Image (tube, protein in one colour):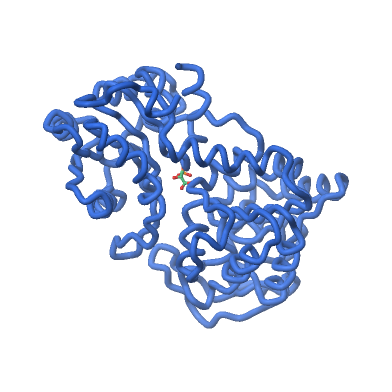
Amino acid sequence: KSVADLGDLTGKRVLIRCDFNVPLDAEKNITDDGRIRAALPTLTQLREAGARIVIMAHLGRPKGEANPKYSLAPVAARLGELLGTDVHLAADVVGESAQATVAALSDGEVALLENVRYEPAEESKDEAARAELAAKYAAFGDVFVSDGFGVVHRKQASVYDVAKLLPNAAGSLVAKEVSILKALTENPERPYAVVLGGAKVADKLSVIDNLLKVADTLVIGGGMLFTFLAAQGKGIGKSLVDEGNLETCRNYLAEAEAAGKRILLPVDVRVADGMDFGAREVFGPVDVVSVDAIPADKMGLDIGPESEVLFADAIKAAKTVFWNGPMGVFEIKELAEGTAAVAKALTEVDGLSVVGGGDSAAAVRTLGHSDDEFGHISTGGGASLEFLEGKELPGISVLEENN
Ligand code: 3PG
């Protein structure tokens, strides 16, 4: 169902899940507002229909505790500017402030609940706890619209459980993303390359299995590359590693070889003495070293120049490319080269190129590319990867089941 199928929305309270998980700098400035802009068509449609809009969203991973570091205040301000109206930010998620904010809404007005992940039950594995929280959300709406594509792979109270409690519909962003990403799952033109990077190492490692079934080449950069190097028995110095997944990586490499697929790893990397990821500060000079000679006291933070050429060639040889996750710490100029090389290669693909995820989208824009240089920029990172894997996305299947 689409929003139009929900009937006359004049004066109705529309509870909507958006994905406003945007990158912020140390001063809490939004460095890429792409996910907020992507929500505008549905929000505008609802305002024009005279609905009273109650938005649920998350920012980062506050792990069930209210924490000003993860407040949606910067999002409320930016959304207000883009919509040209005040966005009333509640001070809590389902407490007194939220209740008063929702009750005070007039037709066409917009409220934003505080970060839903302040509530411990939001991401709980305990279904009863999630259902209880979802009932509180549902009390804020007459209907529910799911438009946070970036979060539809999460079985969480504001994404999944709430949809069971209200008449629901998919927003136009979710509908658009699904229709475009289908081109990558239904008969993609080959060779098909998937480029993976980014910092959510455990999440990314868990998708490789299924991606190996659909793609011809997997190009690996970003945080997880060092776990692969360690799995091959190489020294990785102080680089990020997921010790629990070394065996998994070895299996992936063997599986790929047996299936005639390619897992492409870098041959050189950029290293420094260390890094404060929160403050985005790199320690010591940045050097290039071979992956066979990473010094014990250095931390790998980007792919190196030879790998840039290797990766760019593999990308340009493909007819379908999906890229999720920066190659290095692209926010720092000296560590943006790998990501820049991948982004440029994607713009030169003779076929369909898709960029997915908040960080990758932010990276291409920060690096000066415009959205129309790519086939599609998806707002979903993990969500688009799971879609490509052919997995059922709980936030979408729940809509179909409860209509
Ligand atoms: C994302 O950034 O991919 C989405 O907002 C989901 O965030 P999560 O990985 O913390 O669930």
